[in-house]
Amino acid sequence: MRYEITYESTYRYTGPVVGNLNRLRMRPTTDGTQRCEHFDVSVEPVADRLNTYEDLFGNEVHELLVAAPTQRLHIQVDTTVATTDPMPPPDGPWTEVQDERYRQKAGAYRYHPYAYLHEHEALAGLVKEIRGKTPAETVRNVARTIHERFAYTPGVTDAHTTTPEFVALGAGVCQDYAHLALALLRSHDLGARYVSGYFFTSPDGPDGESAEVQTHAWIEALLPVAGDGDAVWYGVDPTNAIIAGRDHVKIGHGRMYADVPPVVGTFSGEAESTVEAHVSMRRVAETL
Image 1 (tube, helix red, strand yellow):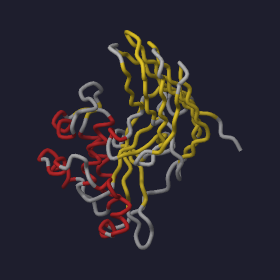
Image 2 (image 1 turned 60 degrees about the vertical axis):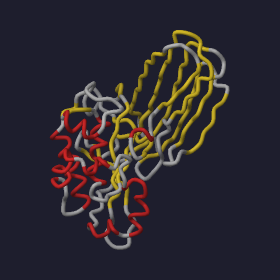
Image 3 (image 1 turned 180 degrees about the horizontal axis):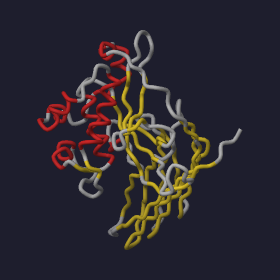
């Protein structure tokens, strides 16, 4: 599948602001199931400085600075990305999870930034329930269980809601689903990372060609391969209880949402700010 994606955000300020610095994590990754073919960032007013660097998790970051006083900032990102469905997940045994090569590849993604989540009483039953005969079966159990047990309800949580709070509420959004999935998988020593990106769903159904979307979240679990094979990062979407396939466009990953926010900005001034943001995705014909 090939998508043309346009992200636009307009910030308005009640008074002049200066030193407007924003960090964007919006370039789609290029890996085994996805290829970023075009990427462009435009800013109005024109940025005084535009730097590109890679963060600690391997995500490309675009840092832009508008130094002069302004009361409006418009950011537009245009990208084209080709995606494909992944191969079936490897089904290596639990014994491979304790192998030193697996543990090194999992790295920081084996540990939750808030360690208490692993032992919280609200999670204890779920931790036991989702354990499968293999890590791959466990990942499938996590996606199915979270999808079935929790209600997708925008507005009841925010970026600061903890996983125990989400479990107690019984409802939340994709960020909450992903954080719970991470906590459950890491409780079984599996490497798991938070993924930020877009998920194409058209109001015109499966054959629809365009849609207005929002940033979406899912997870990638590090699944072991039997024998001498290297463990594989495999994407699963617990909000929808599906494998992350060709309709998922990955932007970046981290330990949790705070590692990969699409936009983080600061400015100097006494003004208040508002923002309007839109993301459009359009399917385009494959080229030879």
